[in-house]
Length: 261
Length: 276
Image 1 (cartoon, each protein chain N blue to C red):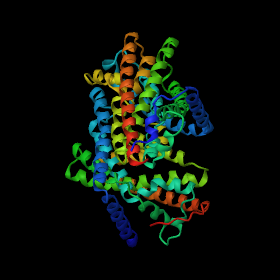
Image 2 (tube, rainbow over the protein chains, first blue to last red):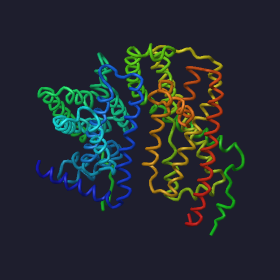
Image 3 (cartoon, each protein chain N blue to C red):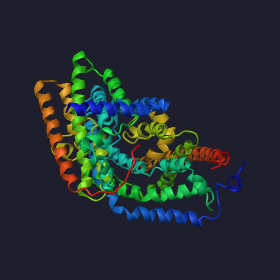
Image 4 (cartoon, rainbow over the protein chains, first blue to last red):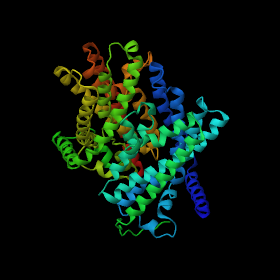
């Protein structure tokens, strides 16, 4: 485990120094992402200028939701950014390279990439959190803890969605659609999901798992809620790892010869 | 050195027949993957369900006071039309890739106009997904919030607006693609620019729900002409307003069209000086 953490850190430094080669482009990407993401907040500022609040959610809750989204998405793409291309690797037979190493292939795929904008997502999360009423000293600690747990849940959901490619022919587009739809749903006020709709938002497009429940944990902090979130993170990790490993048995090599310089 | 390619090159090149063929080929090729379009059905359902839940909660609490003349069904149908136009295919990456790889030089030697080739190919690629998404969205909206009355006259009245909306989207994508002549990766600039679609195009919040003076300002901007115009004039028609939409959309189409042609001519000269 310790060696994986050390290696992950080395990969992060390598990815970062790769981006720093084009320093200006890197900073444009980082700060561009912060500006870009603020558009989501502006939409809700306009909305709440007319409707004040819906089902207990106002602008503060939307800021919190955006802060959390920036943190979990940012952490995921910073440390496991390669997960976003699992589907493509499976459907194009590109896993061979990762299977030839002694370390876990899923971990290796994850750490192999970090988009230049990744740190911009985290920065956006931190800035947005400072703007909402939950940014107390204890609030910061809870936010960071819940952000890490949400990043674990979100990253494992990405693995599950992309693993569809093991079982269905060319499901890359379908898995991307599931991911982007879940992400866009997770940016909406989660209090509107009630009754049967909760089932869809838990098991098909799990926005409640990656955003709804974590936001509730920050809003109403208690140990029991945190333990529930930890339980969800463990369960989804076990499920994603099992599905990926089972899927690997169905994987067909692309017979690709690659030179990785 | 000025190459023969640039000297002989014309934006509007020869007969229209070949552009129709490009348009038709792209429609056929998007029909070949018709099954893939159904993937979008489930996500359209989830998004429209979410919007209807949000607006239902908002309208039940504040609607009658704030918007006495507007119904929940009208708002959801407005979102359906805006989202369908938004689904139109982005040509920026295609153009950007051909500029960066130098493939554009090969295109310029072909007996057709490069902008028109991409325009008709874009229309061909876009129409099937847009109409399919509209059909899916309409079915979903019908079951979620019920129908809204639509006058057949208005359907014909908004058809030119729909074509104008797609043309506006194309010109903007074309401009961002051409920017690759000067900027290595136009993605980050275009990503920020397209956020205006989301905020001021009424994609999530229909412009009719905007507070003043933002509503009035937004109605004059290009994003309202490309995303909001069709749905607004179909769902909440006002014959005095439609003329204004025609004029404003016409203005923005001409504006972005001229910028596209100017950038294209400037960019093509770069190919000549760099040797292609």
